[in-house]
Length: 142
Image (tube, rainbow, N blue to C red; front, side, top):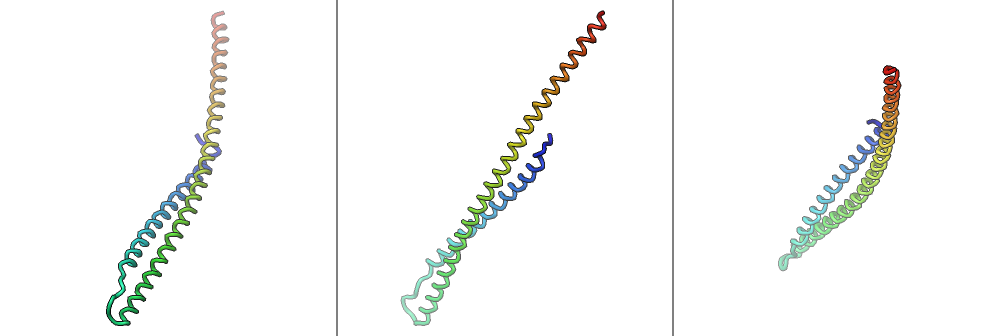
């Protein structure tokens, strides 16, 4: 049965689905960022400074270590940003879900009212039929 809330409910459901999809994508990006951070940490820990050799080799190793450290820090920042992004989309999802549930409740209340109204009309109609049969039945017996 279509109510005045049906079209609004449909729009809210679409918004909820979109929020859920966006949240899911953000969570996937967060997982990807965390995996990249783990990989960067492993690479950083695997770098060893030479214990012997030329100064140039030591400088190259230090530069490589510095690059790996910067890369690791960038990945940490990306993970932190993705956590904030997920929190933001979770809030938007909760808000969309709340709006959807409100409209869904209003629609169910309106449907209950319509059912009550229809039931009263049906009872009234049945009463009218019973009264007309009663009077019609009396006239045919006379």
